Length: 292
View 1 (tube, rainbow, N blue to C red):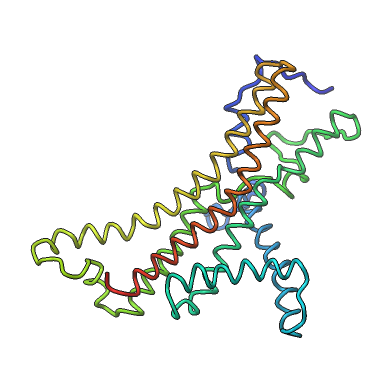
View 2 (cartoon, rainbow, N blue to C red):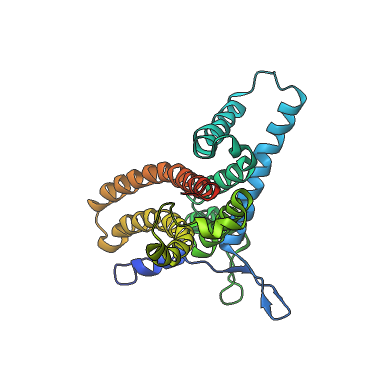
C-alpha cells in the first residue's frame, strides 16, 4: 500500500536535502580511510564513461580517414572542439595555447557532461516509484538505510553541485596556472606577479595581495560552478513541492510550467558554466605566462 502524502507530512527541506545531499552507495574502508563510492562519485564515473564512449570512436574514425565527411554528431563535436581551441585557448594564450588544448578540452567536456547528466532524475527512483504506484513492482525493504540497486546505478545527482568536486577541478586549474607561470617566466614569476611599474614601497604592499589573489581565483571558480549548478535544482524542487504543500489543482499547472522554464534555463546554464570555467582558466593561464 502506497502512503498518501499530506501537507502535514510533506517537508520541502527534506526533499531538497534528499535530492542534493551526497551519500554512500557502496561502503568501502581501507586502512581506516573511508573510500566509499558515493552518489557523486558514481555520477562522475558515469560522466567519464560517456566521455570515453563519445570521443574514442570519433577519434578512431578521424584517424582512419581525416578527410572523410564527418557524421552530424562528429561534426557537432568538432564545432565544440574548434571553439575551445580557437575562441578560448588561442584567443587567450596565442600560439602557446596548443600546449594547453588537451587540458582545456578535457576540463570543458568533463564539466559539461557532468552538468548535463545531473539534469536527468534518478532513474531507479522513478522506476520504483512508478512501479509501486501501479502495483507492477513490489520492492522488499532490506536493512535500514539500504539503497535499492536500481537507484545505485543512476543516483541522478549533479556531481558539480558538490564543493569537493568543484574545489578539485579548481585546484587542478590552480596547479596548471602556477606551472605555466614558472614555465614561461622561471623563478622571476614569484616577483612578477606584481604589475610592472609599481614603486618600491607600494610593491611591498601589493606583493602579498597579489599572492593572496592567486588563491582567490580558483576559489571563485569553484564557488561559481557550485552555486550555479545547485541553485536551479533547488528552485525546481521548491516549485514541484508546491503541489504537495498546497494540494490544489490550480497549483499544478503553475508549478509544472515554472519548473519546465527553470529546467530549460538549466540546460543553458550547463553549457554556460562549463564555458565560463574553462574561459577563466585560460585567461588566468595567459596572465601567468607574461608579466602584467
